Every structure is written in C-alpha cells, then in structure tokens.
Length: 504
Image (cartoon, rainbow, N blue to C red; front, side, top):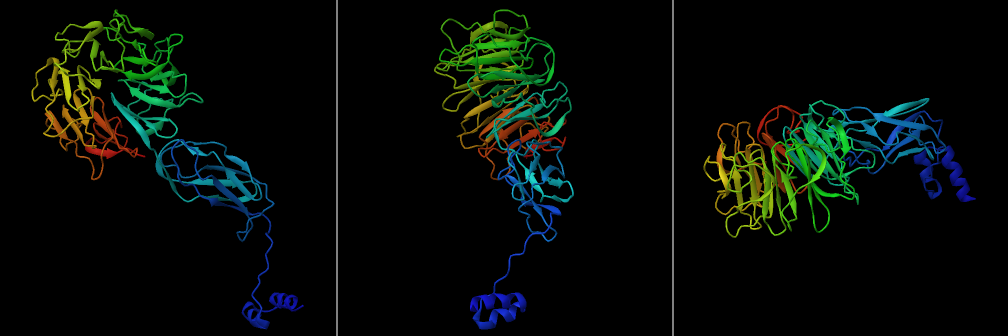
C-alpha cells in the first residue's frame, strides 16, 4: 500500500516534493504519443560512397507535435534530394511505408561525388524534414588518363566514372557534355567493371564475372567500339567478340582497341582503325569487331598496350613485339617501316620487359628491376635519354641516381613513371604543366620529380594527351596539366602545374 500511495502522490504533488515524501523514488509516467504531425530524420546519411548504398540505412521517424515517435504509424514516406551541389541523381527505393513509426531506406544511393548534399522527407498530411548536410565520396582502385578525358574505377562496386572532354560520348554518361568532375558511366543493368581503358575519343571497360565481356563507348568512326557498327555511343555497348572469346584485359589507342584473351595461351584481338596495320591481322583494313592478331608461331602475350596507331605486346618471358605505324621507330625493330603483324623489339642484350606502354609515336618498357627504356619519337624529350633524337631501338631512360621505376605510362608527347615508394617522375613535353614540376615553359629531356602535395604518394600514374593523373593506395586521385576540357576532375577548367585532387 505504501508503494501505491507513493505513486499516487507522485501524480498529484510537485516532482521535487514527491521525491522526498516517505523516501519514495521519483517515478515519471510514460506519456502516450499524440497524433502524427511531422517527420524527422533519426538515421542521418553517413558513409556515403558514390553509387553505393548509403550505410547505415537512412531512417525517418513519424512523430507527434512534441517529437515523440508514433509507434502505430504506417505512413508512406518519400525521400528526395534537397541540396544537390553536384547535380547527382538519387537512386534506390525512395518511398517506404513506416513500420512501428519508422521508415527505413535500405538501398538509397547517389551517383555523383560532392559536398553539401541533403535529403528531404515528405508524407501526406505531415510536415516534412531535411537531413543534415553530408558529402558523397569516391574511392578509386585505378585511374586512366587518355586523350582529353580521364576515367576511374571504384574500389568496392566496380563502377566507372569519367570526366573531361565528351564531344563523342567518351564519358559514357548518356550525354556529349564535357564534365569537370566525375560522372557515372551508364553501364547496362547488372554490369560492373574490373578495368577501364581510354583512347582518344572512346573508352572501354572489362566486365567483372566469368563472361569477361568487353564494353566500349564514345567515338566509333573507325569501328573502335567493336560492336559491328561505326556509330558513336554515349553509353557502353557490348564488343562483339568471336564465339568463345573472353577478355582478360583491354587497351585503347587513338582509334583502335585491343584485348587479351583469358587462358594460358592468351591471344590478342584488335578492332577499329587499321590504316597503319595496328590491328596486327596482316592487313590494313579497319574492323568494326575483333580480329585475331597474327603473332609469330609459339608467341602468346602476357599483356598488350595500344599507342596512337601502333600496338605492342610483351610475353611472359619479357620479350616485346610491336606492330602498326613506325614512322618514328616506335616499333623498336631498328627501322621506320610500318608492320601489319608483330615484329620483335630489338632490346639491348640481356634486357627483358615486365611491362610496355605505347604513346602517340613512342613506346616505353620497364624491367623487373625498375629500369626504363623508351624508343620512337623524341622531339619533345619523351624518351628520357637526355636528347631530342628519335630512336629506332630501346634506349635507357636517364633516371636520377638511385631512382628505379616500378611502372611507366606514355602520353602523347610525355612519359611518367612511379617508384616503388610512390614518388612520380615525368619527362618530355610540358607546355600545359603535364610534368607536374611546377612549370609549363620547359620540356624535360630526363625525368623530373612531380611536386605532389605533402604526404601524397602514388600507387600508379597514367599519362593522357596533355595531362597526367595518379592514384594513391588509399584510392584518392590527383591530376595535373591541361584542364580546358575538365580532364583534371577538380571541378574547374584551370590548368594545373602540380597535382590537384579529383573531386571525390
């Protein structure tokens, strides 16, 4: 009875007084919720990675006038983008019925990175709500600079993003509008990418999964998309590979594309422009779908790389072969005669290549020990041997003392490499600041250090026509050089003489 009387007193006396009567503890009654009048975000958007479900899931509560949840509410709640600083698109299930007064949105996603996004929530007859501002970020597994555009591949979902010039649809977003920050490639439903590669006016991606299908988009005037037509595409189309052929890798040239098949005896296929024999099928006939490269008997390639109008491949043993245009000696066979099927690169005695990369009219290779060699056009110093003399066979890149390069990438008239410790070096043409050394007036005939921001080291670098990009091990991308078309991805069209961060 005493406890009952205490509780009765708590209902009828002021709280401070009731707490002292008969030593009773203060007990507050549970107030029942009133009628539903408004919405409130109780699970704010956090950890928002572009094109991926927002986690943890966004939640919106149905509340009464004083902010209590209404457990019995089953209102249909709709969320939309409020502030939309980067022109993103909200995807997923955007209308959900509340369960016990809470609407849970499990698969919301936003396709473009940027800061200052908000979500708005609405329901019939209720006051709406706005989320706190949040950022949408991108984390890249790889980036590829090509022509006047750049593309990147996200780490988790294999979504492809591109930015820069888009006059031929090479960004793959369904438009032909240049973009100064990354936009999502509109891949077919269910398709994600394991790799992307760019040509001058087109881009290709290798799909994940057992099919290993290749998709391409952008300019197609020479059949470089491989879909059997010469119709340009502003979103990905399937490459019409021969029956039973699947690709382990793809590489884009100026107006042609090549792929390497899966399996132990990998074969190379190419398609697109073939005026210099860059498809390697023994002809100079352009092809709108893949044709087999006529490699020498017993030769299979571990990797292939497409230059502007030539192509090269390297075997598992480190022997390099090239084919196509050879006007500057970029095939490395000691001549300037173009070839419509692979010829052996005349490497120095004892030199074998771990990888090769093709530029506009030059080619470079790097050994397993980190020593780089280049050959072909050298008028801008892109061979890195301290001269401007064209070379018909590989010459040693004059790297600074103690510097070894784990990988190299050739652009139009410049070349860049990265060390095992993440330092980037570039050499060759520098009229737009593409060497990243803080200048844009002087070509460099030997490698110079890229002036990366403090604390930034690169896992890989890639060279485009007149710009360069790098990606860190943590998935942050930086670019430098020409930016008139937005290919640096920093949200501007201002050239940069040192690396700037891609909008992420």
